[in-house]
Image 1: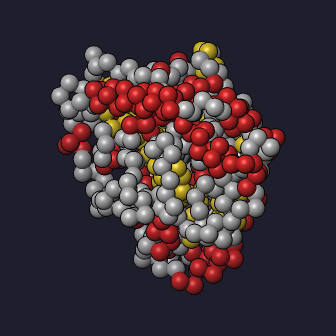
Image 2: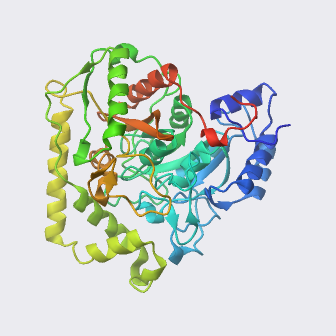
Length: 474
């Protein structure tokens, strides 16, 4: 028996179970021991008793049978804390389990073990809260894993477990995946239902996972995707995600690709972009795609509208607790509530909707099947991971841009609802950098095959080098 968690991906762990090389009970014990010894602060809540009780019914023939699962703090599991990572809700308890987690357990056979840390209300690109403290990037302690799915990314990249749930309302899957060297797919809006009690807010949030491999992500969507009537905007089920991996190479040949450094008006570190652009050009050549530089890829600015509309939901959750709870909130959330207070009116609503309409028109033009491109390649983040304690940086590779720069690369796809994937693409100064590839609605299989091409030709470390131990599972 090894005392270390599995260092391969989740699919290989299931294979090891089925071959008798490893048992779910061994893996579960190693996982809890590793979490206890970890200094990453990746977990907000653990439930060993529930996980061990579930071992009696584990079926390793299921897709993720016996695989320990981290659940993002903003997802719900009946009986577990439901705090929104916010101190005013420290005592709140979930009354129901989310559809995604339920499917992972009942259909997939995964073992939910606890809640991974998140940024407060999922509103910030750094995982540091008054409720749980600061979460660290396993590639370098003292740097952030990003947010809001920071604990999920830290746990998976840090070798604590192979899979964790994540959500993306403005980049919260892709940003942590990019900072931690993981695969992070933000699917087409509605691909996985957000039921029960689905609320829509500004219609940007999708849910999924952060993982070590493309096949883990594909298997995840095989289990979790599909319509649920409690979330009427969720999409019909699509089969064959994992089985179809690698079958779209012919479809990718000849695809038109825009390679864009300043996507969404972002400022990207010049040194990082030099490396990413070289990887993008290699990928285009490898897959027989065509780089196109004469398509207008400018987008209207949506940052203020996105922020105002997002803060409305937070203010509604806090209700009468605000502003009395101001000192119990992280600086970013407090500032956001203060600066957007009173700005949401009928006029503001109309302006936000008009801006969103302009963005939809721009994205439709960019991805036009005749005059546009099939894919956009950009960066997942404007720079490598910054300080874990924050604040959000305003300089990227020596170039000033402002703190609002952090989400500009990611939230256009949230606002338009189309899929985008973060793919590990090497390191800079010892920290991960990642490509972000964006496609038309419903083209996740193509994005997964683009990621698969990188994974096969230029495999990335499955866990952070600082966390590699002499355990089986390579």
